[in-house]
Picture 1 (cartoon, rainbow, N blue to C red):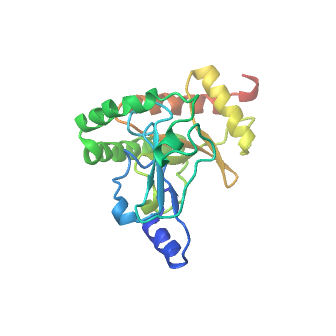
Picture 2 (cartoon, helix red, strand yellow; picture 1 turned 90 degrees about the horizontal axis):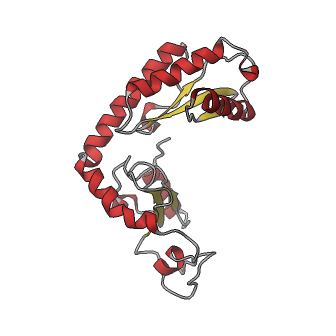
Picture 3 (cartoon, one colour; picture 1 turned 180 degrees about the horizontal axis):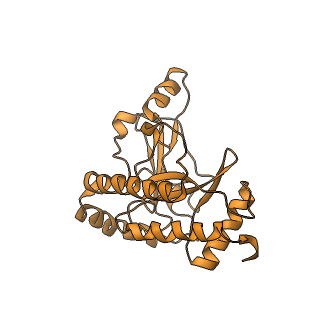
Length: 225
């Protein structure tokens, strides 16, 4: 969900409250302008949408922030801020070494404008396809708050399953074991949703295979399959 971050930060400033923005999905999905956001801190992950390996993330600190900041766990607690947060002894740092290559690949594919344009159009196409196939709908939130590359599509009723978190987890296991599809299902407001995501390496057939798997589950006693 896309939130009005700038407005939230301004509200924090009004009440002299520290603002920490957890923007895990932002790099590669949204253009970031830290001077405009003016948060005190901002964190994000490069492994979600910028093709870097898992664990490659960052913390940005506003130069206006003057109070001390310390890492709760560090091999270098008495050193500078970067050393405190980056060097933790047993951590694998190879993901950071790959970031320059990931950035170059991101640029070679047209950077944020072209990638975002493609993914936004494609996730809408995939969503419309599954909504029509399942005769359901998407999570009812304002379109202005929908992330460019993500959608929540309501699942149809599936024989043998309710709408709890446990049902979602059991369904994910069955879909993976029976159809070799790694799906992300969520229980929201007593309904089950598929959390769809799209990246430039996806094609519509990926979502067609997933959609047909759900239709097959509707026709069987899925818990016994």
